[in-house]
Image (cartoon, rainbow, N blue to C red):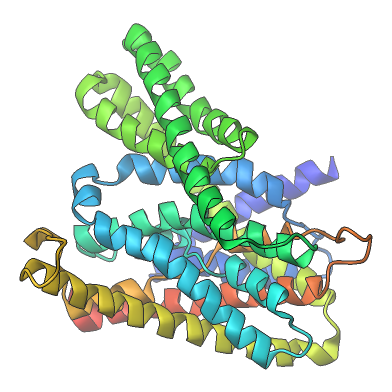
Length: 414
């Protein structure tokens, strides 16, 4: 009964704060994050620890599905070169960059542990990007690139994380095997998502006029798709994204209007609740993690986290501007790969793409999911330190970039 009451209080708090954010013109995710941190320090507040399995299964599938469903498929296809570059290449580049800084900066941070930290913080978060940029009036191109990158890069980060943790617990790392497994994980996720979409398309075609049955199936399938993909050791993220993209195209041509309207209203409420709960939970988690760190190390490791945020921004900025330059050269015929004019973007968009790359709930869930012990039965080295760094990086990233992004957009007159 006590847990039930806590859940109701958190839900009521989230709804109230979301309404207040609109009144005082602060991005909803940022205000929820601040309130979550403040409430977490209240002595009477019970500790609400995030279960990483619940995050990955309960929150991630519907949020990924909804983002994929609402993205413009044509814009996604046009900007696929940029999306792929940021979602795969930049993830591994960021992993390496963070690992190098962490290894040489943080005492006791071995190379395997540094790569674990790098993999945890390598991917930007779809929920954060959508939550903060919503209502800012960004171009469809910028929104599509941000959404597309965030939808796919989780899969890249999870694969990098899996290999890094394996190295810590004593499993040998072989580059060619890792490359093949990465391709299999992504390709397998795509295959699972496509097969489930084909099956769902047939079933929905049979029940297409029954709005209740159709919408119930659509609500259920992101979870089923994610579970099936993970059962076969392939990317549940890619499978759900593939399903969402397919259903988006199908709904525009095959769904009756009353089914589409009912579905949209229902999903709006679901996504509103899940988005709000995620940012509030991130805030509530910080005081819990803080208690597990020795007091003498708190400010030192907070400084390390700030440096890591700066490094990730520098790496991201360099790669985004390089992509802008490469696209321009390809359009002018100076590279073998030709692209359309619609895929080009300017320097202002490059800066917005850089500044919108925030870390979020997926990084936090991956960090909290770190094993407690390695193969020999010994505790996982520096586990509390890695989790603390991850949480602080997420907070600095969300608050620093999230609160300043509206001002930057206004300054650039986008």
